[in-house]
Amino acid sequence: MKLKDILELGTYGYNPDCKVDIFDMANFEKRLKLDTNAHSVFSLHYHLILVVKYRRPVFTDEVSERAKEIFEYIAPKYKIELLEWNHDKDHVHILFKGQPMTEMSKFINAYKSASSRLLKKEFPSIRQKLWKEMFWSQSFCLLSSGGTPIEIIRQYIEKQGQKK
Image (cartoon, rainbow, N blue to C red; front, side, top):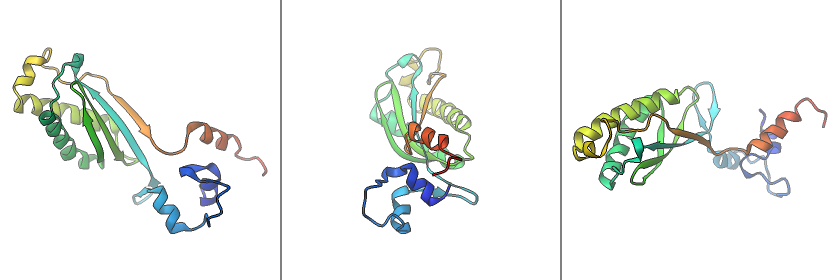
């Protein structure tokens, strides 16, 4: 996709009525905040929600901080960068960046397995609140975030090949 196409698409808040020089590349790239690797340019942000099995209230600030440390230890192995972390008594919200080759399900399963084992070991009182030693719910919620709204992308794709 060419720069002109990106701008026409309306990505990242481009305003066609704006009188500013839209081809100021340095400024444009700063606004995009794109990541790169050897073969691609990307912006992959995810919102992950992990819930304790049967929503047992096990998260305190201390348990959450340790769960976050475990995430930060495992994440670089999958080329993931933590951006934001917060918790409630029975779940955590995690905002992070990934790369195109990252296998999200493998990363999430590795994290859930390691954190479950370590948190139960380091905080024995948690075991009393759990059912059958299971820390995390088997499921998870992973949402992509940022970028252009789906409807604008759909319109852009529909217009491909049409003369302007």
